[in-house]
Image 1 (cartoon, rainbow, N blue to C red):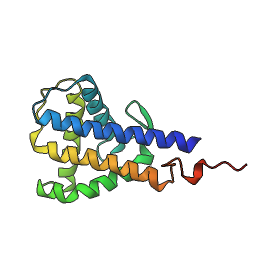
Image 2: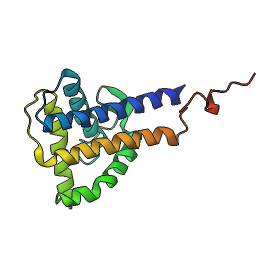
Image 3: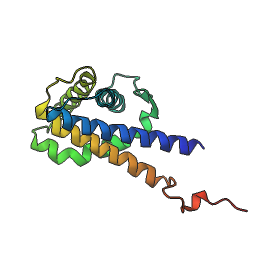
Image 4: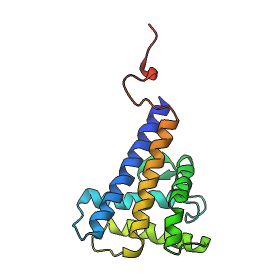
Length: 162
């Protein structure tokens, strides 16, 4: 049952990250954010800050946001997402480690501040932040499927010997 609990937490994290990416699109387009959008943006900022060992204070490893996903378990998916967006980061002149750390810190702060106000401005990094959220969301879903989570009712993990 522990695995099923972890899968549900990973799925929730993936869903909230994708919702935060969608909220960024709204925000960039000048649309008003509702309470759920702001909550997901704030959660994503807190969660990513906890997952990222480049911007987290020492000892921040543990649980991310108000969700009980173990951030140490999620960290490989985070780095996979960073690798996926690396070519886009280079296009935005984020090439050195200090540039990346600065971008990540700014992104987390923006996400967290967007949960309080819908008038935040982050036009330069919005596309990269959105892409990072989407890639991490996808990486978490892949992590679930790679761990053989039951994906359909026909999956053999639902069969009980008689």
